[in-house]
Length: 491
Image 1 (tube, helix red, strand yellow):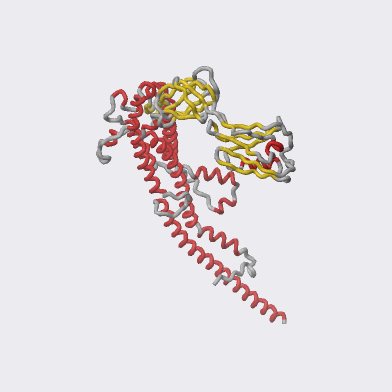
Image 2: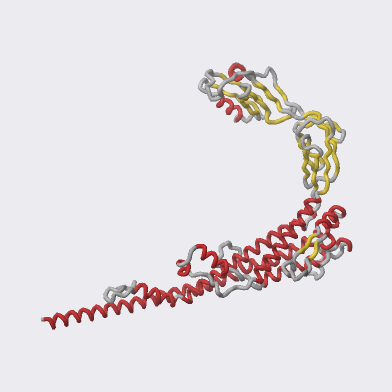
């Protein structure tokens, strides 16, 4: 049953305010638990941010484990207005000479001038047949049909043709969607409506034409203005009077960009981990309670919480261990490779040295881009082996990692520490989720304590109200007796 409350009816006291103030003192342990829970939620968010960074580098390392990332080919045309080219993973290095004598064309019928408004009605009944590359369709025209509705009926016929209206010259045109000699179009107009109303007629089937090119001096015909050869796609765009050269070579720029991206991401990770693990938390800035927030502006709350979130991962064991492990695998040479190409320093990647009292760059990678480009150009296979080398040893063998390339080393090391973070925070995206992770279990324990404490606080609050209610009833009785005595004395 709910407690009966007589709030200051006799005494005139603001009982609710008094009890609220008393409960603020009683709520102090609950506030501390809520602050602990909030810190854990913020800590989870910090871990999640770090996991995102680690996962991003891991994805890049995963690509660098495989030779396909280092054997990409790029195709370059000497005149892209005539021929453009793109290479696939199956492309091989080489050169091609292409002369375009004729482009492939579609079958096209251009109507005579009819100069009408497409939105007006045709005004007569009739029908005609469209015989296109994908089949035959009868187009029905009524007096109420508009020119535009007939046009749409043709385009939706599924015969592989497209009809359009040339408003500049006042005529209809219809053509096949496909190109080449096999692309055929015929209009069978027994009623005469296609020619009389739309100006379209074909005494016989109209056909497209093939493209004619000379590839490395060999004449060839194609139904399309594109073809593939040796893993290279050639798109023909114009007729040429002389041959266009297309060169397919290893995409060294992509290799350099990939390695540069890794160095940049790694250095960003070093900065972030250092910031997270060396920032000392301030005891002066605990998470705000709901009561504290009520007396503050949004900007004040935001500034306070920004300071309260500092140092949540101070000296964190997972992050400091991750940096140490990554540094170790990057410093060690790759066993079994030639001495001139068995370490990152051979391609211009070194760890920055202590200089002039500057400690901010310690642990970061330095990249000599000129040396990297030279290594990729002069010895692309050597650079590839640095990252993709595999070992025949058992993965549990102490020498296994030394025989593997940097791609696999990075991937496995990052996987280990990513899994450690997941074990600590779980996989949920909810910051205060209760799960089997370490922080999830901590939140469950806090929730249980908070539930018990809230029950006790409710009992305390009910007791206060009972006590004040009893006081009010006692005062009421005293007032009644006082009034009776006064009335007796008066009489």
